Length: 141
Figure 1 (cartoon, rainbow, N blue to C red):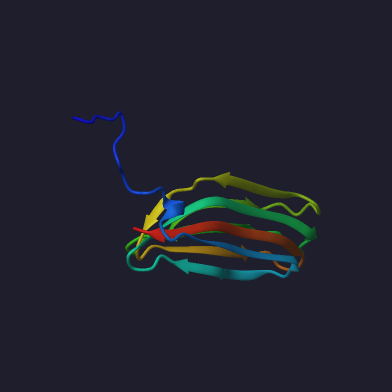
Figure 2 (cartoon, one colour):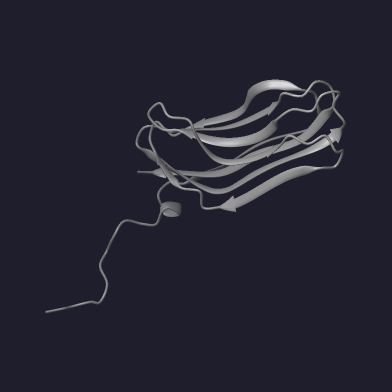
């Protein structure tokens, strides 16, 4: 009888018809605006998605007349929820001031999940620079 010390399992995700997408929105001197969806990716039926990196960054470029809350955010919507995965935010009016965040391996999501990038600047006047992005690998479930 032949024995072995390993078992045969499913291939790793990268070997299951994987497709990698880089979703990125960046803008310099962005004027104040309401919450705006910059990109979206829906996990198709029969697939799973794995977020390998997320980047959010926000910097004040020109001073606002009245500074208010501003942010760059990546979120995921799973069966009606809208949960932030990563947010860079500020309420500061100092030119050059900002916030940034970057991470790797931010979860695995099933079919129907919607991953989105958003920006917002509720200030009056002034401008910001933003980056909001995610690298997502989609593969057979």
